[in-house]
Amino acid sequence: MAGIALAAGFFDAIAGGGGLITLPALLLAGIDPVAALATNKFQAASATVSATAAFARKGMIEWRRGLPMAAMAFLGGAAGALSVNLVPRTLLEALAPALLIAVALYFALSPTLNNQERRARLGAAAFCLTLAPLIGFYDGVFGPGVGSFFMVAFVLVMGQGILRAVCNSKLLNAACNLGALCVFALAGNILWPLALAMGAAALLGAQLGARCAVRFGSRLIKPLLIGVCCVMAAKLLMAPQGPWAGWLNLPG
Figure 1: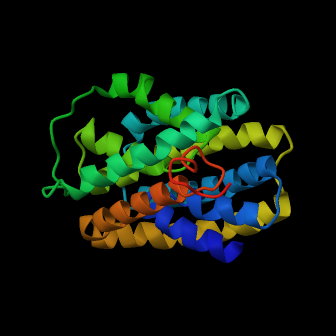
Figure 2: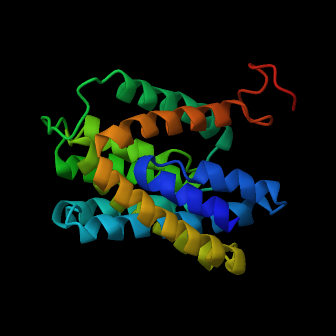
């Protein structure tokens, strides 16, 4: 499980989606679903905090604008975790693959996608009050692809270059992970020995991933993001007990 978390942390630091590697592995190990979700949130928080720290050391985190957004994402993540039994998971399971495919298509069909800045379509205050807590809430309830959703929001709505969007998305992703983690920890759902081992491995993987993202930039981020989004969408679509199982004639 630590080895899986290491690989997930690496990919998550660059393109998001590490949770869709680790969460199914925890479930396959026979862990209770709620405990698996909570334990996975610990390693996810370890990875995103580690990646944020790596980008911060390079001076690539915009703390002044980012901290208010991170605070709202934290509240959104906590609210999502509190509502985990209230929001219909089938709706999120059906919606997430479509959103991930849309993200992949956007990046694939944007030939000029690079570190060039564009005109923002939404002000920082509006982003802080709307998209930051909304995506954070999704992370607390369900989670797959949240890093990719933050990234495309920064690129498409805030007009940021892809490397800048990766850095800022890690800050918000870490915040909503920590918000959800606080709720799960207080509820006593985390399997701490396993969570600590996976968290340490995810931290190392995220450090390696962040360094690769800084070194190779959009040449690495764009294809990896497209690939991760497609794999995540396929994984959710092919889930035997998911809402798409009947439409795809899958057993279960």
